[in-house]
Length: 110
Length: 251
Image (tube, rainbow over all chains, first blue to last red):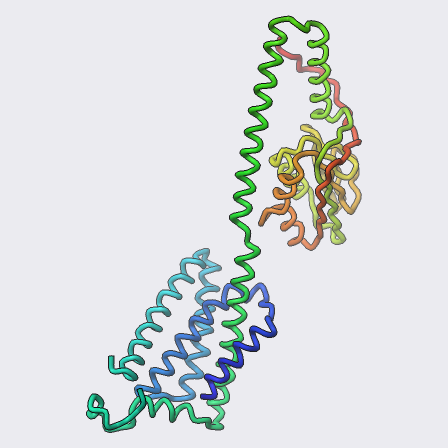
């Protein structure tokens, strides 16, 4: 419950304050967000599987974000930034979908 | 759907139902990890909101389609102008051929030609619609190649007469840059660098402001360029034509 409230609070903060993203962060923010969403859905799935662990969630969240940003950074350096970004988004999207499917099976048996 | 364990479809699961498990996790606990997870969620929320707003802003300011439309507009305007010119020239040719206006007509044509060539060669002052740009450059970062790019970009955009820092830019002009001091055709150019160009103001301005163009390059170098479209600008600096010693026209 607290994390969900935190998410809402964060959305409200972002909408109200409208912080400016520094230029160096701009390519990484969208990928980092998708990676974080993957971690969140993975966490919810783990809850339903009964194997949720706070520490694992925090670590996976942070490592997801860092690794995603790192891949984009590396891609930028190698000159294939946009393609690699697309790849990361596709992979994370597939994972989010499978996690959501698993959550759905748990909750609705369908 | 609530977690009623009596539901027949989940009888094979003796432990708490998934909904109940979700609710149990949702109960606030004051563990360090829970607080951490909550703060991560706040961060995620801020990130999503920020990114969404950033994307929307970018969508408004990108203006790639209007830019394209403007380019297309310019081309069609230019085409129609050229068409009009063709008709005018054909009419002139017909008049000359028929010999209705003889000497006076030929004289007027010759004078027009002299004027045009004078403006192009920089030997007469010129005025017309155009733009002025002032590049203030405290760090002396605007170097010769950038000025050369600027001149080329102005020419591409159809500038008919260019003056930079009081020096008329013509076909033979060269840009020198030694130790942060700029000079064009050997004459020093002071800072801020003042650029005056005669041409279609819209085309010139959009050629300067185009993403990745001159103004952006100047800004990236830490200098600032202010640009203004003018209904009338005057280019008064003159270029001393060199006397040709070798080349003679082929009749």
